[in-house]
Image (cartoon, rainbow, N blue to C red):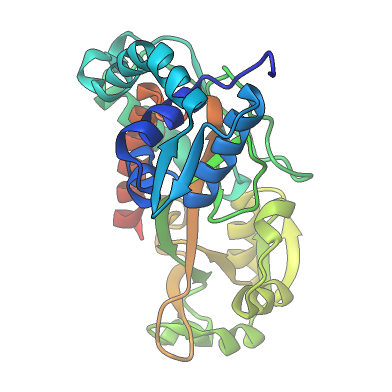
Amino acid sequence: MSTQLDLNLIRYAAALAKYQKPQTVSQHLGISRSTLNRGLNQLREHFGDELFQLSSGRYQPTVFGQQVISNLLPTMEELESKLLHRNQFDFRCYKGQLRVYVPVNVGEVLPPLLLNNLAQRGSALKLDCRAWPSDGLPKLEAGTLAIGINKFPIELGRDLVQRRLGAVALGVYLRPDHPLARQRSLKLDDLKQLTLVRQYLGDIVEQQSTSQYARLSAAYGLSVMSIYSALACAEQFNFGVLSPKIYGDLVGDRLLWRPLSRVDAQRVEFEYGFVFHRSWYRHPVMEEIEAVLKASHQQLLKLN
């Protein structure tokens, strides 16, 4: 028997004993079937027993599994009750620091939105925004309140969880006198008529596999370190800046924004989400933070 056990797996055991059907268990826990199987394998390894056997589409406990459930059931019910009764958690009383890793191209826009929505919920958390590292994933550790915001989905290790926030339309900022500015929207092929200047986004964001993103990356002619510099280059040298429509306050009427669309007339979007350490899974504070992020996303859509 292993000497260490992820306490989150106790919830898995409780759900397996109560709901039995794999789909029902997965839905109750809010996890995929593969995640459930992985957690069950960890429980089996820890206790050195099958614990549950799948028979006729239901998980049935072994004799030893029944003993484990009998011994742990009061603790599991109490834990489940505390996790589910979110009204007992007061987000306003939760203090500390919230570290947020974001791609640098939204670093100027997102912090004020987050601060505003944290304040709307009466949060006492102090915000610490940092650039998403260009050489890999940010350092998200157990017990440290930290999230990363980036494209969705990305490949993660077993200790991290990612959730989708939404999508924003991509377009191009242009000078009003640029010929393409006469069009209401731009096709991907129109980018051949542009020299695009971009703010360096970091390696993770650039790892796009679809052909549309490959074509966008090929169109870049200049990289800079600041969105202010990118927009200034667009204004002074008649370049284009690929971006969501979130910098109207910076450009005024000096630059116009035109959305990008595919051949099928569907708009080109950037889909993104947030990632956090599994130790915060279903913790009330992370659910409050998710609500803050979703409110901020809705405000981004109004800009877009």
